[in-house]
Image (cartoon, rainbow, N blue to C red; front, side, top):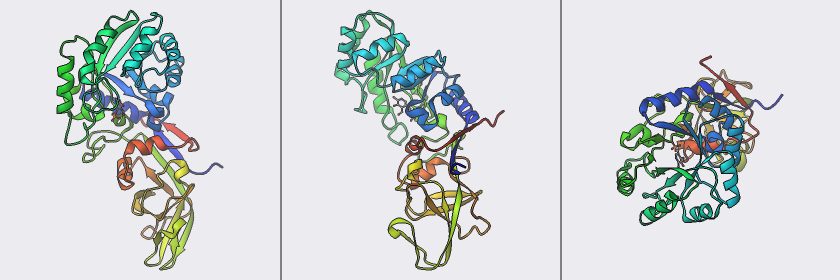
Length: 358
Ligand SMILES: Cc1ncc(COP(=O)(O)O)c(C=O)c1O
């Protein structure tokens, strides 16, 4: 028997969440499936999200894998190409490329002009990560417009604070001013902008986290947004310890029982992707009942407080996040974001897919 841990992936929830995006915007949808579809599995996520008009990811090997699997949509490399060698694969597999720096244009100009390359030109509108600075945009675009291998240009930018009170106004203004002279398709919105700022929808929206059923906003729940959790990380209790007052649990003796208490040991640790820094008090479900993590997370196990759950025992089901326990709540308690928890699931956790709708 393998360890009792598993990540259950609800494919119908992926389809559902895509429809939530569809209802919120009439723009074409570029489903962001980078980082192994935020930890959910590239191909299985792409299949469930097949209605999307495009897929965005980073690794050219993943893009090729999608093409080989028969996906005919636009496939966009979000960091574009890195070496001239990449360009022949880009042409062979008909991939769209973000171009965000001069060096990429230099490479493109040095490349024999064959194929028809769809360019997504990234404007740096204030995030200062990838993208052409405002004073470089026009010259760079002029170079691309005359390149014989460039068949189309979409203008894009990415927001730094669409999920926060700051919003998108300043970046949207910079972007709109810079691209005003060009009659080209546009793409700006991540999940937060898609859900909150219709003025950013333009021609393509690029939702990621919402497709996986997590809210991009700290103060609004996924349920309130109509999203359904896709990944549920589950395991079971494999041992029960009865502690006397004053005894400690696990490495470092971080947690000390103030009174006699029952503690369950769960087959899930940081080598499965559970965050080691999750403190005592982080929420967890045993059966359907909410309780808390106690003590330090170890490589393969963690401990939960069973004091108020006398009917639980070895074999009881534990939900680390997902159905019944939003991943955002666990992330918040651990001082991180849902994205990190979902992406951090490790290869040793068996994946079980199911489709509630069928
Ligand atoms: C360029 C770009 N667009 C869209 C997204 C999707 O963002 P989110 O997962 O917040 O919807 C990302 C993710 O980081 C991104 O890097």
